[in-house]
Image (cartoon, rainbow over all chains, first blue to last red):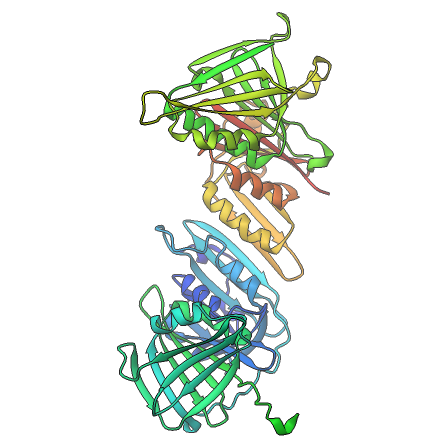
Length: 281
Length: 282
């Protein structure tokens, strides 16, 4: 119990305190949304949500439920702050990022409230690190208004089925075109690059597909540069749910199993690229 | 002036390679001093390299099966060469399964340290690979520049924690800051600290132990004094270079701190000793 010897830890003064026996259960999932320096953090009784956005078109959310933490105490209804995610990740992995054979890094994270730094106590093998990361004014995050009742098409598949496809995306293509349909070709990923176009079809009854609920044929294009960061989440996940709503908005939900076998979710929302019709030009 | 030597034993060769690799990670150029009993790799503190200096001492008998040297004259039976350790490290890269390695001083177009590797082959005749590494011979009048640095009058001497852990911590801290404060006391504690506009991080190591230097005032320390921290603020890249570059797996690693002046590291591995000095910044 090395933390108890730290005189600075007095839980009374903090609006948020949480602890983890294995800091990688937090750092790994945050890496899945680390494509910008800054992130917004929201804590409620349910747990911690960390949000990163890009270009008002892409939003990534990582959810770490309260149950993942060994201790999760929140003294207000909700706690919100903005933080430099790059710095937070460097601090969380101060004793090394890879899963070594030794003991895991224990973490205690505390926040006193608006204007105060986020304080991390990390301990591994008797060595203690204290980090104080300045927090910033919280910013409004985008509301994609992605409502499950508006979802037209939904496919759940095993991540390995998508990993290879995403790893080999033709980056010279500006778009990834996704076709989801109750009829052939069911589920098609296409790119249109310098060296020609590529189409990848998944049969509806493929072993990789766990659920297939498509009600209407939809063809949407998404900027590859926006989707590329989601491959970090894809790499860690075991299953992915791909959904599109009536506006063509894309939701990618990744189910990630951590080192202790618990399930966490990372979610990416992406706007479709607006169709420029002949009439508009 | 003559120098020729030969390594046959594989473990000696590997050990020698690791030492050379370490040195090549720490400095671009260095001075090689050859004496009858020892080899020294020396980097003196020049402002150009940030005031860092290094002193690495090997006993020739522990590495070489044959070792003959003749210095400039009987009174000063030594040779001083300047070389790029990276070149030597590269020459030894192919030597891992060599039957023997010869290192000698030759004069081809210019003075060279010639490394001749005898590699095994399927036929009866073995293959010889020769590397000529250009060196410059340092004249006698400059030898005084390469005197062994004295162990500074340190305020605290302490054993370092596991270098792997320390390296990992310093690596992360380097992402966050250009400078690091290293502080230690006579009670076996080291703290590594950085502080920037964004974040402050401090890592605390304890129960490290302090080496028993024979010192006149050590016995009179009051208990209050042993908790006093001596500190130095240094260039974090220099520290990381040292931690990441070392491949000697030291049996003992010691850090001496001269308060606000310099940090002095000593790595000991059997017969090899490597000293590294990093000056403190204001």
